[in-house]
Image 1 (cartoon, rainbow, N blue to C red):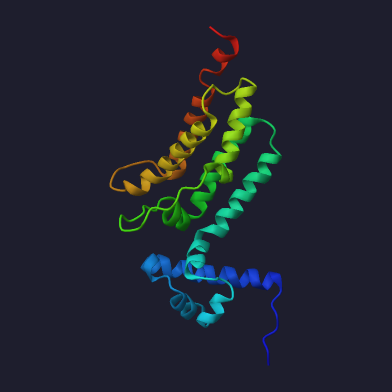
Image 2 (cartoon, helix red, strand yellow):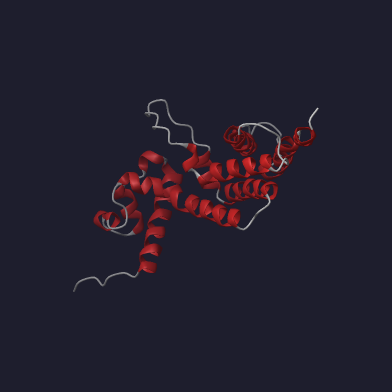
Amino acid sequence: MARPNLTAEQKARMRERIRLQALAVYNEAGLEAVSIRAVAKRAGMSPAGIYSFFASRQALIEALWLDPVRAMLDQMVVQAAATPDPLVLVRLLLDLFVRFSLANPEILRGAFLRVRPTKESAPSPRPLHQLDFHRLLAEAIAEGQTSGHIRPGDPALMAQALWAGLHGALAIPIHMEAWGLSDPQSLAEEVTTLLMTGLLDGAAHARTGP
């Protein structure tokens, strides 16, 4: 008897189940252990069954992080459309990034903090404006500069600096565990406050002139 066709909801649930099994393999044995055969065995499926949901091993590996990160970025786009104040939006975007990172420690460690081994070829860089998090930050900064509430500067570079500051706040407690650093959430909150202060510094002077 032929297997009945799955509904879109059933396909989405099965895809997520496979992704979670692949993530479990990754957490236990590293990226090299994530193979179609290993994930199929863990999921109680045939390798051919995995290929029904993921076209290749690379697609499966990308899905370890891609699906939840895409959901986070979609949430940022929705929030941006509903938040007209650029300063409020910048803070909101930074807070969303921190909350997502802390709520998804496997993605924080496995994707956001992953260091490419030297034996791996460097990927071809993609334009940053294609990444919603950076694009929305840069657009909010530019709008705040137009209204005189954010200091002058290159919005794209300033957006990168905000991202880098938060990345460091999340990374240093993990990479420097031997030292008595504050927990990532407390450190990220303090860094966010300092970053927001830095955006405002000089804005009033720029509005009034020397």
